[in-house]
Length: 239
Image 1 (cartoon, rainbow, N blue to C red):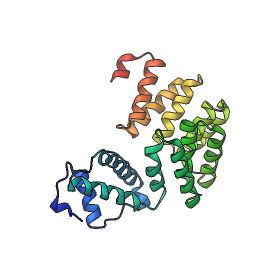
Image 2 (cartoon, rainbow, N blue to C red):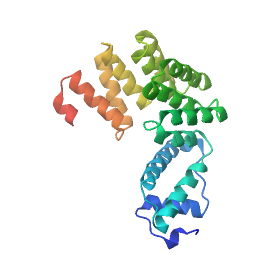
Image 3 (cartoon, one colour):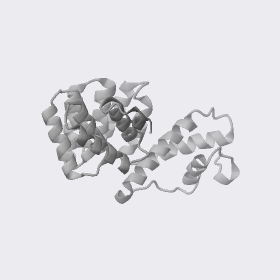
Image 4 (spheres, one colour):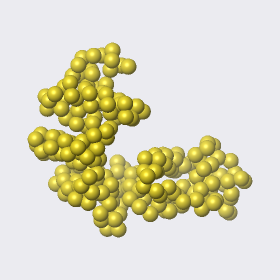
């Protein structure tokens, strides 16, 4: 039975929008200038899929939501399709996640975002640091000006390869390309604290990262950690 959004009940607005998208064959966002909005959209879609997957599917509304969720994922035609397909298996079945990534990269061999995410998966989940470095470098080769790829590789070079000089050069390269990139700022600041670098500069970077992304929990927690452990300013850390 093909149920329309008007004929069933959804428990919240996001679920209703999922059904509306299916009913009217609405496309996913595609324009590059909406990349931030688009990323948030797909993060919300992934969260919604997790909620829908927990439904038992006993009633027509729940079955329709499950079908709409599956179709929404199937209609994604870029690297996000691979990422969303792999994500549920990263902790429960890493081999399956690895297979999904590899199949995705066969179709999208120059997607720097997919290469970067696969590198992170190989490093953080699989523990295969040599393969991780291969894919970090492939991501940078594919997009030399992608500051997220540069910053992630810089962190890897420092934390795994223990090469502080090379890591600092990569962080600096990323900030030259995009001085106001919050993710690079707090990662570089963390690097400076860990290596005994310029703490005043590190604090400025941490605070600027929070100004650029005041709701980003990573920037906020990084600043709080810095204030607690580098400055012993416990009151400011709690704020």
